[in-house]
Image (tube, rainbow, N blue to C red; front, side, top):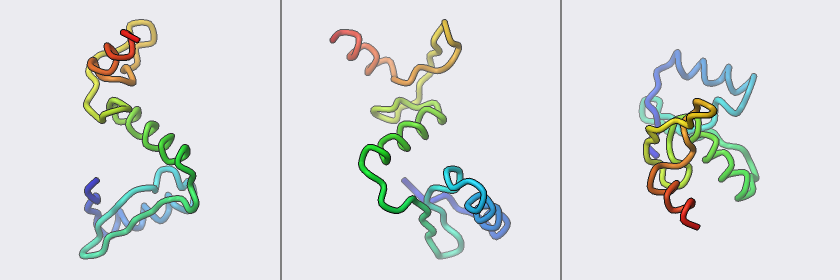
Length: 93
């Protein structure tokens, strides 16, 4: 994942978010020629995967492959968590 380029004001906002709620501040950022990586210390593999899935669902991506999901669940009105390919693969099992 490429770091997100930020300016000084966004860097200040990032530190404010870090003080209040670390979940929103997690990520890779590029300020001038410095890469700033914010992550939690001593995460287990399960917690790391849970964060990845949570971020992908929020962005509307398939949790398995990261492809953009276009279809919505008719009952809930929310985007499916899997792309068409992975939904068909899971349904065939």
